[in-house]
Amino acid sequence: MVNLINLKQSLVKTFIGFFLAGSFITFGGNEKVVASSGDDVFGLELHYRDSAFQCGEDTTQADIKVDVYDQNNTLLTTLSKGDRYTSADFDSINDLTFVYNVYNLSCISNGSSVAAEDTMLLGANDTVPSIDGFSGQASIEEMLVGLNSYEELFLTELGTSDPSSSAYDLQDVVLVVDNNPSSLAFAD
Image 1 (cartoon, one colour):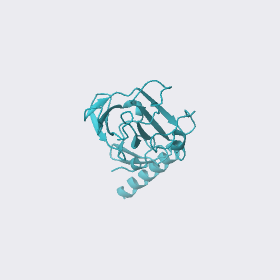
Image 2 (tube, rainbow, N blue to C red):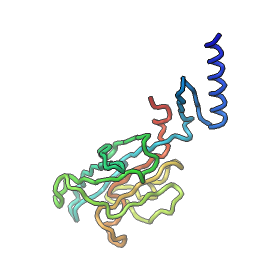
Image 3 (cartoon, rainbow, N blue to C red):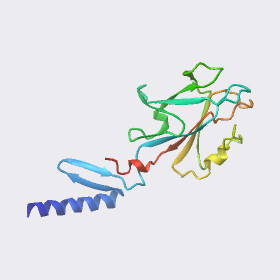
Image 4 (cartoon, rainbow, N blue to C red):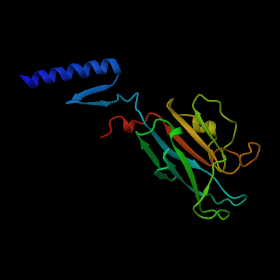
């Protein structure tokens, strides 16, 4: 009988929690466990979408590794093109810092860190700079097509800080920032 009463109380608390908070909430002992409905997931996912960086007329493309650090300067991961990093510990890309390590170029020593000259965070409804893609890349506008309202592009320019330069394309490293990663909705 006691188990049945506890089950009823838990179900009522679960229903009330779901109704009021819009999330699935259960209680176990003195702990409260919250699993989001998927619409209000906390955390973020970075997807290293693309990069294009070369030395002058040499068409050899750099291999750029992106070191991701938290605000305590703790290395969280190193991303290569195509990689993803997901964390429930951060709700904004502003909680992270990045170091760009360049490989495979004749004008830069392998593994050298290159500072970002400029960065830009763009959402689907933001004003898009009119910059063509470089070396077969899609334009920034094309990259924004198909992004969900909770996704943004984090664009990085490594070569120059001069927007009038032909080298300035904000596409030396392109990360897609997913501010509502579905992989965190029901994490273990």
